[in-house]
Image 1 (cartoon, rainbow, N blue to C red):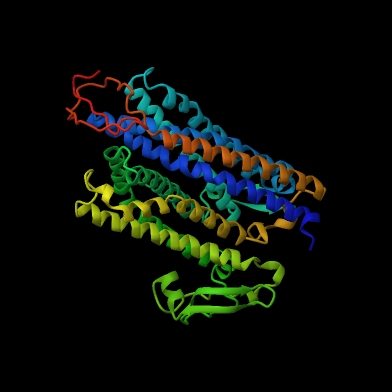
Image 2: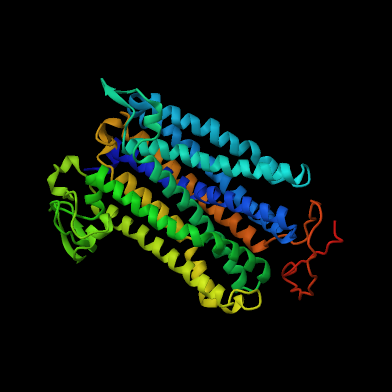
Length: 485
């Protein structure tokens, strides 16, 4: 098949490009917004000016991600009218409403309060500003909710029936709270939060290992670690629940995730494929390392399966997912990263308990700081891998079991789609380079430790410590006593 003459394939490639690139930005803003709420809340509670300076610094990276997220998110939705018009016509009464809810409820809420959060520090009272920060965080996470509602419905369509190729809604509630919705929303919520935590922790570790603002960023790393203690293991557990759901609701996707070609009957133990080389054409694995009986324990915490695991060969080739190697290894990459981040969190907590993360000792933990820097981009890779599993594993269906992808695409000239795909690739490449440039500049400049602290009432005395200034950067520390205004 000539890829460049196939409209469906080109439309899928374009949507994959725009979705994959767009996902990089709201992942951070959604989780970082919660982190900013925590920082500002700590500042208002303790009157410690360092929390205020943290909030001001991290909000710069938030704004950068928000701007690019908006610029890359809008073209995604437009594609439902250009490249996927038959799909929009068939399911638009529900799917279009949900995307409309995301725009009017979530995005407008986030965008409306964003200006107050970023520029209102000295223009509104601290309480009003804190309310604006909470609304930004709520709007960002509400956006995640509606997007996951829409995508979960594509995975498990409920709440109505298809009549003459068009979805007729019987119950909005049933459609919104479809079987995949709860676990999907929770899994993505914790994914965005965990990714943001390890990005913030990785940036903090970079400052620490370079001995810049060591005490300042040791504090941010500890805040990250305190939240990650709960988030990292919870994400693993919710991921397990999502896997169980795929087992019961989407057997063909599970077979692709595990490169399972032959059916394993109920009541029998099942081996888990740790590594393999799937062969789509011959319907087998050319090479495999498996763990006996492990799949049953992974799916149901017991040796024997209560339901069969259907093999890919039990479906006709046109009715099952392809690109099995992509789905198979994307799933394993996501799982491996989840366990690595949880392990790094546990190891860091151990060092914290041993007193190795104090301001005076943390810079000596170079191996640990390097591990945090290495972990900073891993959350992005895990999120992208998870969406590959979710969407590629759903094929050949756009609406699982109801509308095939081949029937959902618009009948456009391949040259038109190839042209728009090429333009997106160029523009998004420029945006990515720009984001790296401005993001790195924000990080190189570091926090502005000389910002005036707004008066919010009595504050605890902050001990003034002499600091050594380097000629090539701002002061390493700043302190404030209760006499400052």
